[in-house]
Length: 315
Image (tube, rainbow, N blue to C red):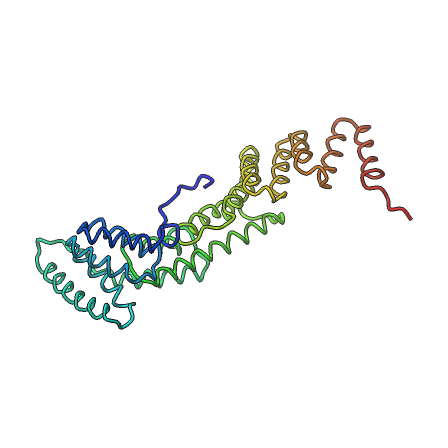
């Protein structure tokens, strides 16, 4: 998307369909393909963090694959969130056995068992909410970076879905605000405009993609390019935005503005006449183009506008 590398989706619908991944994991588990099953169950917990059976399936598949540390992590996530039903009681017993095995493995110096990350994850979650509250969504130690760290470090739990949804919503709100203000002609820092591409990508990776990302992302980058004097790149990006959202006439006007800024007034007029022939701004460009040809041509075009195109109302 507009030069931003596509990262692997981490949480939400972009990961996949949770129920389908759960079913596939169960099928593989029943065939004793524990490692493959664990991969599917893990994806199911990412696609739909509230899908509790996926955690239990993940725990058992990891145990079958002899990943005791990972199994205990998944068992804890399930037991912590599951209602007090028969499966939970059985899972609690399985967790107790898993933790005994993990404790024995830690005593055995020949086995390198990963460190317990519980305390670290508590700190990361606190940092996530603090960054989200401050509006720090992208960049080092921002909410997006912190949540990505939690996911890549193996954090499990239904609250991951809520965190991702909040972050995705914040990204949508921020990009919508920048888009609206840029369309209105407000001057925004180029860095903020370019940051929008990362926000669109983050929203996609952490939840539902922005419905208008394919048009808004190139538009905002185009405005940044225009502000930085790269009129050729601005024209390309505005054309991309206009193609993605043909109903938005503003994108075509901005493309014409980029051509005019580059000194190509005939090109700007051609765009406006082709796409917006009845727009008053097209008339202004016609008059400016005629004036550039000669004072007489400019006067004739101005006369046409005043007394033909916008004739006085009859009394």
